[in-house]
Image (cartoon, rainbow, N blue to C red; front, side, top):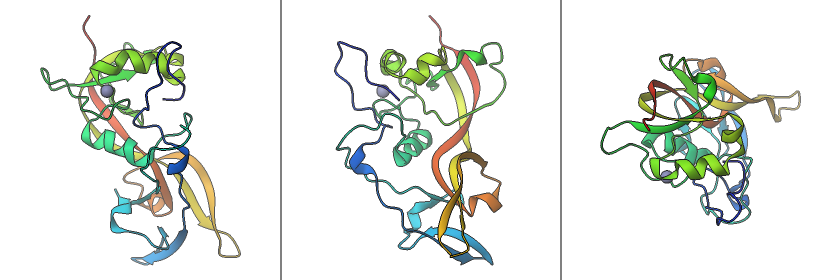
Length: 206
Ligand SMILES: [Zn+2]
């Protein structure tokens, strides 16, 4: 979600969109793990590492100015792992069919059989219209409402870090996709979004 709701409707507080007060300092550092330098926090908690990489730390207050252009890392990952709606955070799986409701770019039309990687979480059936109206990204992509039979994590969107000559931790790459098998990159990555590969994509009926 990257824009306010349509005129005449109260803007919903979208689930995957962060708020200003959820932005936290990131005390990044490198440590040695299995003979390799690895990105960590100076006060890292075990749950801040998943899929072999460190994840961006963020607050959960949902207070302050809505940051429409950003994505809340933990809520985006939760949506992907638990098949939840990007708008409301509720289940995006259709109880009748077991399929997951998803908005996909029209560019996929005609190629529904190919597995498709995406960092955009599902949208529940009830919030399809709201998501299509409110989100400039989705409007730009001329989206199609679909359902997905299955999907699985394949990578992360991440910033990569290294150390400069003075030993300071510095960002070297910004928002690049990194596959879950690329352990040499995951060691110095700060993951911000989970990428999944969706399969068995079908246009919604009606
Ligand atoms: Zn929803």
